[in-house]
Amino acid sequence: MPPKTGRHRAPRRPTRAHPVFFALGALLPVAAGVAIWLVGQHHTPEYTTSLFGQEGEGAVTLKARLGTALFGLAVIQVLLALLMYGRRGGLTAAPRRIRLTHRVIGWGAFALSVPIAYHCVRTYGVETSSTRVYLHSVAGCALYGAFVAKVLVVHSRHLPGWLLPAAGSTLFAAIGVLWYSAPLWVLNEYAVPGL
Image (tube, one colour):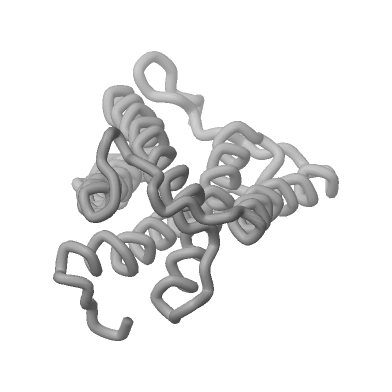
């Protein structure tokens, strides 16, 4: 069957991967997560750091709302990914607008995550004082490692195709754990089941 042209792209055919690509594909995401962890571990917390002009409880509540918006965008991303890869609605090839929407929302979600993460690291650093806080710290580092992995997989023709849904799923899981361990915890009057 000839490749589709016009509005639909032909499926990419991976070329034989050199072991260096696999090594970089594994090391860069891990390095991103570990770097954030180390910065957070060696940073002196500054509890008066503001977030968009809010300090203290105001910053915590704002961050919880932004984190909830981030989780909402992540859910939309999963739904768009299912549409793009023909898992919903009987589509075999996603229209260009779905792919573009997925890309725009993805970069928007990343941009939204940066001030939240910056405030977390600057205000608290990486903490391990309780299960909830430890889980939140690990998930925060994993989020950026998974983001690096997803970008590498999307832009590489040398990595296996199954890595894209794996990286996307890890990214979604990290955002879900972050939301459950902090924004939901804050908005639910500092309590969530299991933490």
